[in-house]
Image (cartoon, rainbow over the protein chains, first blue to last red):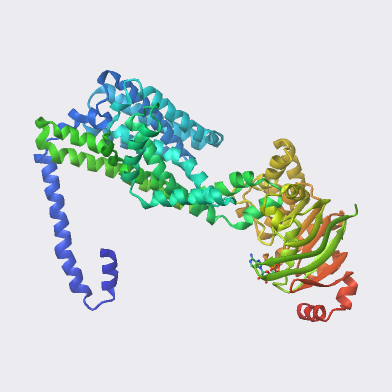
Length: 376
Length: 252
Ligand SMILES: Nc1ncnc2c1ncn2[C@@H]1O[C@H](COP(=O)(O)OP(=O)(O)O)[C@@H](O)[C@H]1O
Ligand SMILES: [Mg+2]
């Protein structure tokens, strides 16, 4: 808005006075704010709470003697994310430097000084980089990525389950919830999108109704409903809260993925289908090999944005009693001993959300440019 | 079995718009039939009915020995003949319609591999042979976006030929091309005709039509008004509207 006002002001008689007014109010205001925050952060704030409560922030109340399980889960996640990135961006030497920077920032930000933990974090990032490099150098491996991510997620569940799913929490839970939702909504969303244009009107009707209903209610409603309904519908399964939460998120976001995919399907010219039909290909083959790849290409950036949406709405799982990253921070503050560290903890939460969010946005932007260039 | 396409009082409507009117037309194996007519007269619709890209409402249509189901039957799921027909009928479009996310050779091999269950090696060998035939062997591993319009259209022809069709349909294959590229595509089509391929061609290239056609079909407002040998048709059209049409297009 400021930029627009500025542009507008260029064509306006009051250009100069307006400019001056802006400079006089906004810039000093911002500087003052930065000064205040920096002053507080460097002199007043007691950051020791972050390293002290880092474990809770990262993994919630997961038992200390079982922490290795969460490291294994984190390794799998790093490998999967690296692989996903490798599908769209070629790994280059300079990226290695960027990754080192990420390690450094993460270690400094969290005040980690334990050698074992430093090595583990370094291993995480190296694994991420390796799988990124592997996938971008050996494209043949890409076909296996979707099955691999399902296997990876199942492995994470298997390794994390023994102490009890009720103990999952912290940033790890937020990331897991995001990852599971992102991976599982993709095939469901694709099926719904195709269902919405099915030649059978009953299929079309059901898919449309599902998508429209999900898109007209709040996420928190769906999550809560699934949480209270699952025990009634499947009493013998006795699903953990975490799983019920993931189901709720998945059911909700599938509708959004379906709409993104549908817009991609619509962007594929009719001539593509007609050419494939004239070659005698089956409708299934046409959709799978001709239409879907072209449609997904168009919607990769919005789908990445959707992942950020999922991550940013993950704190809503507090309503079904889960301890995600944000909730873990609040839990720490509930301890009377730490009652006066509210700003420190919330600053850390804010910064982490901001870093993750801008990283995902950055990737989405890059992708958009990358794909626009490729389609020429 | 010397007839490959047989249309009898075929009618096609878009809603209440009567687009094809009582079409009677048969095409013999080995024959080259060129369909001409003004824009909007129904030429595309006519040849798209032959491979079922458009549905017709009544009449009958026999292609390659199979009856093409009418719209009513197709909507009820009676499409088994359709698959059989399409395996034997190739089509080349005005806009090429190559698959942009696949290389040239992948464009050509996908259908033989999926539909005829050919091995990759076999399909690629065929693809390279066909690319050689249309003069594009060197471009086998490029993407369509890296080729000129004329080259893309030749790839599209090779892609259709890879299915070993008994009949090839061409819907204004040169209309989207820059003038200097029209010749290279027409040359490929000439060779196909000389090799005895059965073809139904919609084109505005009158010189080419006269040269390769065994018969010219003139269509106007959805009805076939004249069918004749090229020389007879171009030199001495019987139908008044055909005469007017030719006067208009041959003026240039
Ligand atoms: N999808 C469609 N819906 C409605 N009318 C159509 C459609 N496609 C073509 N038509 C109409 O059918 C007539 C014949 O079109 P077409 O076969 O494309 O003509 P030509 O190829 O000779 O230019 C035209 O009047 C056109 O407006
Ligand atoms: Mg046309």
